Image (tube, rainbow, N blue to C red; front, side, top):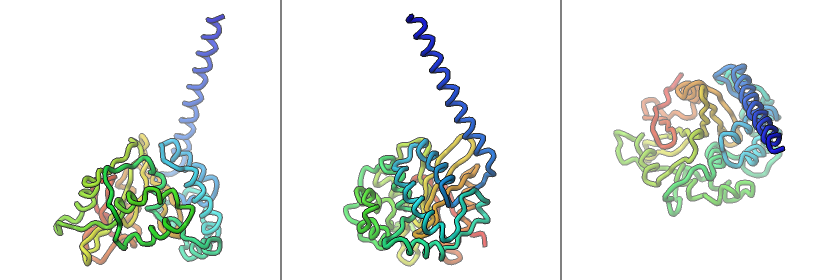
Length: 287
């Protein structure tokens, strides 16, 4: 009898392992069928569900809340701007921002989330720091902090607001010849660390030569796979969520370089790009 029980148990375990391999193979096959690089604005349930499954399997935090935010945007701003529930060529994607804003404001009397709020939500409990600034007195994050302080749906971000402003707020540049070092120095000073081998934070840091400071102008989370990367971001306030698959980080930087809003005047340093707290390069203007 015991032998039969052991045999049944072994058969169940074997079936579970085979099933797991089949699911992994199906997921890999789905990705392979999609052209890489490829991107989606997550304009509907199919792509939102797909991305949320990947976020969840990678160990991102609060995927359920992220899904609520993404669905809300798709059903209001996204619907008004006719954002598609499909994957496309990232170099050819262009959302109607005016229609996104109109669609959001028709259905909401409070601020939408931006890139920093979204990335911080997904990294809650994954990112940690040894220290934080006592009080944020800057101006670059004023719209972020206003939303976090006054909108109930962002209450979860308010719990770690000091870490949020320490991570994303402006930092004084002490070496004018190397302004790209200021963000790296901040990560070291406050002891930032991400406790996940697959998820990292990709940040685009803007240099303001007039105030001699840098701040995080854009950010998103990067998920590593064996043969590709998935970058998940909220482009900006009242602008779409986007997920992008690329084979290399350089390929992703080329795509992000297509956005003129990250660039200052001709000849100014930056924008600088960081993988967690490590400087990995500078975006190159394409026009």
